[in-house]
Length: 164
Image (cartoon, rainbow, N blue to C red):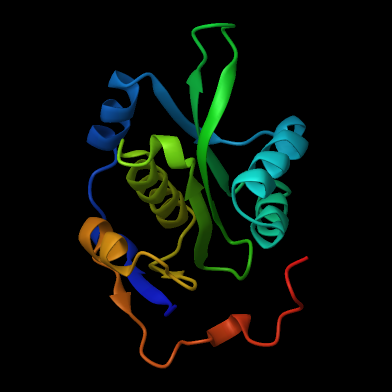
């Protein structure tokens, strides 16, 4: 999977995306330190140990560079996670990992997490972001105008220890 480059000065507006999530009763927000364990377990269960590690690193930053999508469970009034997105965890200026629970894909949650994260990066002073090992290349191109970085496979991820 190639890396992709995003111009943070040409992002779509964030407000309409967050309004769409609000209309669906979904909240996009930064994680808090007490959530590190719960978020890490969710990411490990739905994705991988690699992503759990990156997510935990992002949550140690102040402010956290891990955003989550949550929805209140009507049965018990507690929030449950729908997805997550991180930046500045693998390397500075890198977006990812990011993922959405399979049962909620297609609701715009991934798009909202992506755009909110990239806006956060721009607010922190970045002009560009690298999407490391971009899986859904068409998704990133469509929603944020990301472009493939030629010669970026395997990129910074070469020589990593195996995922246990």
